[in-house]
Length: 427
Length: 160
Ligand code: SF4
Image (cartoon, rainbow over all chains, first blue to last red):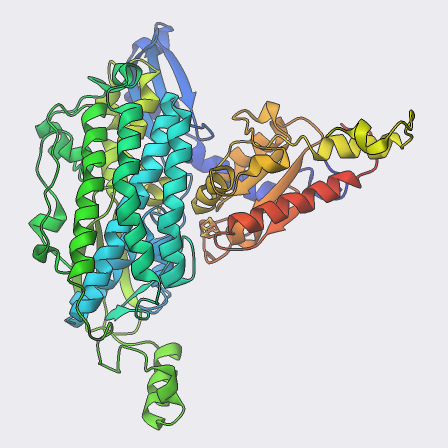
């Protein structure tokens, strides 16, 4: 170890022992999770993670193996528990928005919308149409962003390296749009309660148009690499099967559910942000295996492009923020000459706006599934309780069911196919 | 163009062992493939198409701590993850270095709460802190170059 910091060679006991206590699991508890054969030595217990290149973060899986076949799989989560929900309770409603970026960090804007949408519901606000359309454009870009990372890493796990490099290349185009509108590559916080932070800057249309032009051809490239690739099919067809009923019973949502043939999409079932004004279809699979889930997501790329195209064409003019000064901050130039604006500005940034007592749930279809936000408001400027329904967590629940009887090598394919993000699982 | 062309036919070059070792080490860093949260995605971008970390001689991430000498702590470290992280660090062979990537790993970032270790330097010694939430790939590359400078200047010593 570097000699410059000798005192740190031994880690302080306080941090380590305290958390070790949480990791402890008694033998009695363990016995219930695995089959009795594990105690006779007939089957083997194998630990996968939390540091494993294919668990997409810090997921730990305890596998019981009979030879190479998985007998049972016990996911152990919480290695990325961040306390986001609790932290929300100490933040005003607008200061809570940046925290939501960090839940599912591959789809920051979907999270933003679930949260601000929920607050808007509590406040009974109608967001201007232009803001809704811009939201839709960015949400669909976010879906593609999320799917690109999924495709890249999923393919990488199964052994197709080049797909990853292509996907990351295209993803940069989307990140450029984020950076243009929000100033940050990943943590956008661009949606605000009542609309958007600001109108889209010049250059936005060109960037999005470029994405619309380039993507169809690039998608074809991905399809050429994987769709009919015999090795890819060998690793994905008929692997990790889950039936319709089971998928619903586990509370799965998103492409992971639709791969099993259930047509459920929040955008269609409970339209938000004027999704009902766009024409698009929801791709549905039939077999519920890794390959069908992959197909669903690939088709969604095309649908997203279709929605963006429509929204760009019909983008209405007008404001992007509600004109209620008790909620929307006044424009900067107004502060210079209007006393009232100055007071509003001061009030909003020191105290925040109050939300009437009540509770609300608002869900959006993120790249992973139904991402919902539940807020219980107590009438003050800070929420009483905030809870997020994380699609990754619910989809992960089905992992033991899906992987039973599969080979251990299939595990990485199955984990990849349900597209989990540990930041969202653990929050 | 190789070294010999640059030096002409000088025949013999003298340098101190310390410098030669430092130079060699700094250009063959093997980072560990180890991502925690959002920052790990930016770490992936750094290695991928646009930013291409391999220009600096360290594109090959090793999944095993026993084969790597640089740990990039990319993301927030929860209290449950802390002992795991320390174990991984202990498993890495000497000499080894640590980069704390992002605000969370450096100081807890936006999460000043019960769940997150307020800076990974509470559990492992950190050589370079990279600020940002998440740091841009350019920032991470800058951090790595800083580390390379540091390694070049490290004196020879007995590793444990
Ligand atoms: S510093 Fe920011 S981007 Fe990095 S892990 Fe922390 S919250 Fe995520």
